[in-house]
Length: 95
Image (cartoon, rainbow, N blue to C red):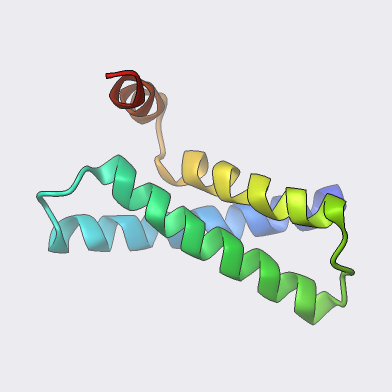
């Protein structure tokens, strides 16, 4: 995975996950927004990156699979939009 592919997937994935998170927060108001964002990021990050790999003919090797997993984390943080949400999530994990 090169930097251009990473930034493209990160930008598109974060936008899609952020929009999906906002829609699901309205539907499931009793769930924590951070958990909803994590679930969305897993689905969007894994599916989006895997589809991009297939469409672009990227080989499935260890490095690209690690990048796929890291993309999920990056999209999760990017879709939470805001430093305060990241701190809130860290506090929830600790407590």
